[in-house]
Length: 265
Image: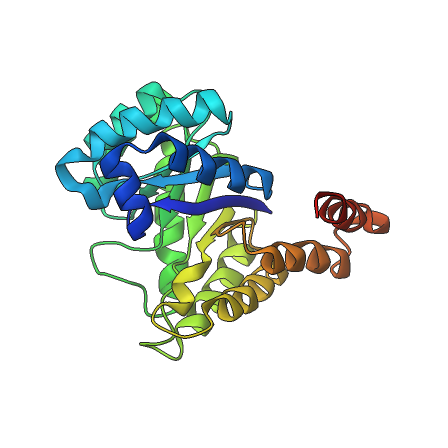
């Protein structure tokens, strides 16, 4: 499971303020804590600062990579901001994200060909959000075929079936899980990803719902997740689930994880 830390998102008030004030200490502490907790990438989103977004990304990305040495998931709907971020990023970044809308794919293809990032592709097109697993699969297949036709290897494509809040639609979790299952069955060589915490938006005890979805999605083969790596129980569940599913020979990773937890406590 590839873990992408979600905490450097400008939708969080503390992050918004830190970006606004160019708070280097806050930025590095958030990045460091997430890496130490096991994140393989850090998602960075400055979109809430509107016209300051590009300047903030150009400020933050070098600081994080020079001090923390971790690749980033560039999270922006703005192609210009994405280009500026990819230009200064060291190593392979994740482009977050494209959709099945033809015009939007065309805008990002030059960046994809030039910088060769990994790509998160949302199951969303001009018709809107998918209302069934079959529709999600259809969008996913269309995006994958388009990217492959432009030289992108399947191992660098992450399909996001889209987690939506169950607080506004009680069937949203089931739709995501069934879509994930169908995509894994029909496109087995393409990776999948999800923003897990979307499931609990607006509800109490959000971590409980996040962990529940995370475990089920892991069982169904989810390859990567945008989560809070500082949620120790969620990360514990990852190692225990992999052990129970037979994906951890002799429980080596499970034992190592809890030895490390004990030694750092």
